[in-house]
Image (cartoon, rainbow, N blue to C red; front, side, top):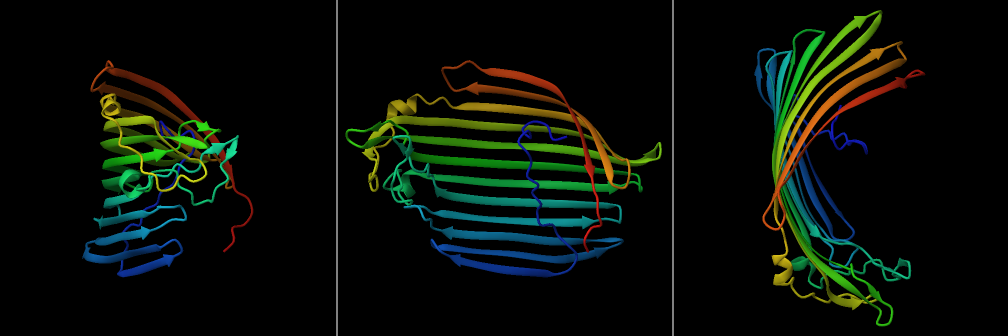
Length: 335
């Protein structure tokens, strides 16, 4: 049902959608490690139309916090406006936007020594002595989503969802990645940088059909998904750029990454095309027992071109994914 990348499970992310009425709230949080956060949620009904209406909602948050780790910090903000248009009892449109920015320290934790984590205070940081300059991860995400729902009758309905997103990543890090010298009790550090820019769109259309066959209630789902992603990515890495005390690494600023290491980077541009088609039937065998049968076909094309040294790569993967399951409910639900 879900295509590539779902073998480890799924997260059901439910966004706050516009509702009829007017309400709102503002929340302020303060706490240990310099936690400071403010968030808001505001909703209103903008208009009433025949058999429907227009509702608006916007949520947002800002946070500026420290950490139990030396030099640790988080700065992040987000805003998510949404508009719901109910044209009739059978047709509605949901438009959602989202912008989020996150900047924090890049922290790879504590290295090992003699097969165990080094016995140092939990706040010990092995990155740069100027982490706000040298060791930060900054992400910026924006997206637009449009969902159209229409019910033809009690048996047949359709849902179309279109989503566009843009994602930027700028990560810099200094980490204990070298060998430990047991004589001098020092550890080598690596420095690295990652730059990534992505954008893409996905469109998914689902038809739901309910009927009774052979005395069993059934709910059919037929759908198709298409999408395209563009991604630029480059890595720069230099190993053993310096050495620090394994028991007292704090305050040491590493040298900059060399021009030779930067020249060895090989930026890549990739394009991914997704096509998926699927069908599913949920059968109510009894009021307590339900069975699920499904089948999905996927075509996934990818192509990558490198700035230098490597030849272009491309391939297409196609596969069928069957699905089967059952569910049982027993007892009387609590009220």
